[in-house]
Image (cartoon, chains in turn cyan, orange):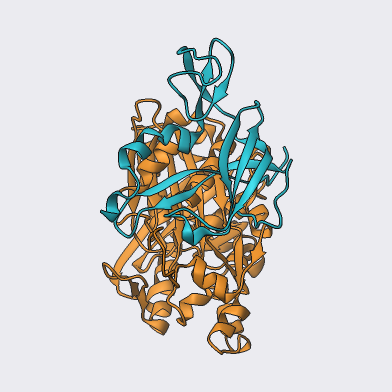
Length: 138
Length: 361
């Protein structure tokens, strides 16, 4: 059972978004999203194309998680943030390489690839984007 | 060994985790005085992977940096090899995850991919393989990575040095390279100086036996063979990089070969971040490439327990300075650091477990 704590097909389907920040762009209204949806959450159009989202952004808001849901206990305290990417796309992501006392709204961040969830000793390791404080501004 | 088609480094990149623990703090954890060990180890602090880091995440960021410098479309990469002794999965290739994350091989993912194991020389073994593929004309570009989250048993001497980090190299035709690999050589013997059995968390080693018959014999033999093949002497090189299990051995082996310390120190990174195992010599090379100038010559000799060495004669070409600032330099990662104590270290290395932990390990 432990081996399948993380849904393997679900994780596998989301690899383009999780590993490469491949999102969606609504051709009708211009709304961008991550992951790419079948239907635009903004206008309802089904005309969505794949869009490579920028890897930098700013922390719009954040919350420090002390009481984690099952599977994330060992990582507490960790930070979940709304990150506004350079093209305006708003995504939900964990922050990493930073302590709760260091984070602030407006902080410049960049995408890294990290472990988000590990299903026991025998299951898959789910990797995904996280954001860390920007190392360089160029 | 020489290739039919000349091969070189098109892009390079390093990655070192942010977290550090001082050797003094490691010694304190076991009631020891660091002063008694400092001169013998010469590692003042070491890098520690964060809770969400492993060999794949390290290999990924090093490879992204190599791609930034190579300035090629990742779809042109047709070989991805990761050398490591800390694979995230015992069976499931790290290279395939790296291929997917980078988009190597194009949308149809037409690339070879594999993980290599040869203790600390797994990374340079990956380099040798890519040299062969590019040199034969089978592919134009390939990625070779050496990365590890090294294991040192609590209280063992290796705990002072076993660290985390990695380096990635995109190799391609010499005509597009900023550092040409003029020749290489590999030397291996069955020397059981260090090993880790299946299902064991930590490696075993043979203390002093890891020195003379293992580290020194293989590095010296490989270096001498390569210089003899090339008709070169230590004075002909501007930099010499040797595998760095601690801060002392590379200086000692270099001196025995006839290299002066000023040629070894620019690539001697272990005193600041510890031994990154498969990344060790290769991070030394990224640190040197970050500052190398056209016309300079570099000798790199790795060492992997079990045992063997790969040696490379590299000549720096025009255009390297334009690439050096395109990605974070090795020193940028070395200076980005946050210190942790032994309690946090024990948690980060998963040496302690929670009563209600569903996150694995």
